[in-house]
Image (cartoon, rainbow, N blue to C red):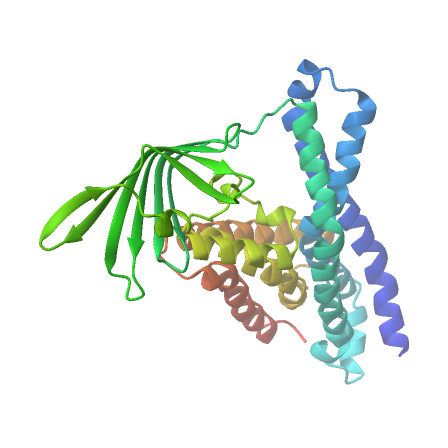
Length: 358
């Protein structure tokens, strides 16, 4: 028990210091990237400070794995350099047994990091993005071009050239109706369609229905039973892409189900959803990794630990960026896009731990 207390007395101050340092670096990077725009838009120092304060939880979330990796690597390397671990090993305590409390701590931190992200990082980051957009005078248009939406369990397909949000209007609209067996039933073309709030459906302008009957294609006035089914909400057609990083896991799942239902691409959003669960697991992995990386040098412990930590973090983030892009374009599944770097680093950590000095 005394060894556990001693280990955490050495580990906790370094962990808190490194977490604060890496978080500060991320905040300063964001500030410097937008400083010119803040000045051009005459944002006050207090407003900029509010943006930085709202961004702080997000930076802590990003910096947590790197902070843990550095703190564990430095603590153990310093114990190696001072021959304290040699004395511990001589007393019959193995490296894995000595560092087991850190592994337990990392599991708790992984769970805590997920909760921290879901209940604190998400709302504060959304406020930061909104406030930053307001200060930089960034305007987001809800109009959208070239829309294809699948509705009514695949029985109705909307294809419009343009959606105008101010008037809630679709222009150059084609409607493809299919029967229960997904076979073509009718096609309707309209110059435009207006969303009617009172009826809670779309009203067609200059609509023509094309129906295949008796080996001929007939052009008729759209049947009322078909136009009455146009109940897909106007919000579906808005250029309103949800940033998964700005919503909790429940809202993200609802949004992904919406993308699936309407036939829109969802691989990227689904990979980001899985990343919400994969990223916290990194804390557990980096403890394994840092245990294996520790003790590689008895000289320049601070520099070596920092270099190894930054190198490992850069490698992980670059690899995850590549796998997320691969999943976005369908080369690998969204699940593997988020979790493959985690699985790979588990293997690397086990190998390093196997060859670590004990």
